[in-house]
Image (cartoon, rainbow, N blue to C red; front, side, top):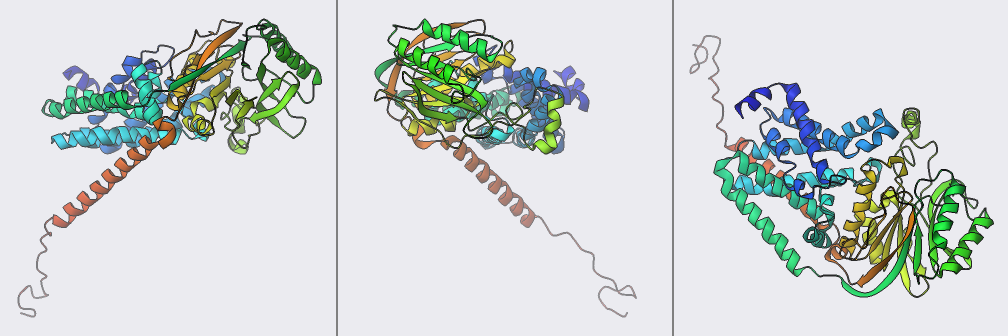
Length: 521
């Protein structure tokens, strides 16, 4: 330990250690999926930050760790965005600089048990503040939130129905802080253990008393995943072939992936008629996704389009939240050069204006989302409040086929299902496709990145309202309140110390003749 301390006396070594420590949590996400690692993944970073020699250094090491986390989380973007991936990681990593300062401020010199209690409240709140800012669509959205590492843990999914993925992130950071205190400050072990006990008790209470989805029906939905097929016409033919095999299977809906149709169906009646024929043959409506220039308005849209036995039903959803650089370039006049160093969008896609709930006769109401949008808890929450029975995500991660991205994306649907108490279908072109029940548990098997198949899933339907749907992002609001109260308390404390400080002794003023008491003498 002493040797390590000497090694970390070098600022450059500390910076490298902070970046590596910040990258460690990525092992808890797919593909490694070491979900249990999330409960200690932040500890090395916390221990490093608390020993920062100055507050300024803590800010810098918070930024270094944030850079490491963002780069590791999005490393699969490197083949597409090249050096711009590093630039984005550096910009987003700055969001953790204030958190680094907070860690040093609260854990650097632990003088009381109350200080540990404050740290267990404030540091998770500071982490949520960073996650909140980067969750803005223009900064890349809420991909890689710490709480999403728990997508396959049943108790955590139950907690997600109470406070969303935000609550999971908060609790994970609190556990990491308590573990760091246990390792670093012997005198503070009692409050650290108490913090762990309180967290466990709160988790157990939420597990016991949170409402469970009331299953009251079942539907049969098929996912068509063509696999890697080059060319829009060839892909359409493969999807048509796979869909035809679903005839006679008593289906309620067939779902194709994102960009499954590469031409406007209004402009090409032939493919629209072929889809209608497929709908008649299978006895189910087909939800396709069109990525093409529209014939009825200018621009390229990504749209979920419902096709029935009589052709286009008129039910259409245009993607609202686009992927920065992948589907549009922010401030293209300034950042358009990104197209010359990677596979950034050559032309901006157009945005839809509102979410859409699609009615499949009187039987079923579905809410489609396109790709990146499944990362946003507020979008599925809104659709649930609008009365959907099933959430559907149409995606394509074919650009990142042999990376961790497909597995990470598929895992997000488990959290969206658990948060809302609605089953969710994640259908892709090239994998990973997956389906989850209203409790977030997986239904059936995944279609991996090596599959070209059509698979039928029997989905339980559930109704009722989860606490998260009812109360929304209350965890975030509570965290921001904690930060505001702490900042106000620190400000009041600083003011009180300034007022109580003794007045500096000022020597008496001397006259020209040198007598302070008798001027002029």
